[in-house]
Length: 79
Image (cartoon, rainbow, N blue to C red; front, top):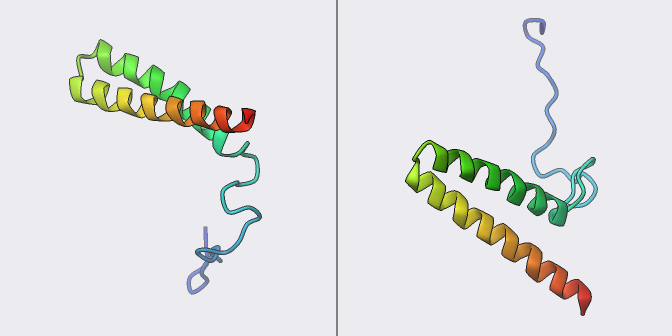
């Protein structure tokens, strides 16, 4: 509980926190995309099971985008 008249300190918006794309405890963009692809796959199955056609479609597009990002990223690393 806070005392009346006393405000909590907030982090400044846009304040640097190490790397711009990587928060502490995260593995970076590639790991994030892999995690998103995995979770979206599970959500897509759930949407299909409950006959949520639009969500199923949109989650499918999201999965394709994440997979494509990973494919292109790994292709660049090989060259």
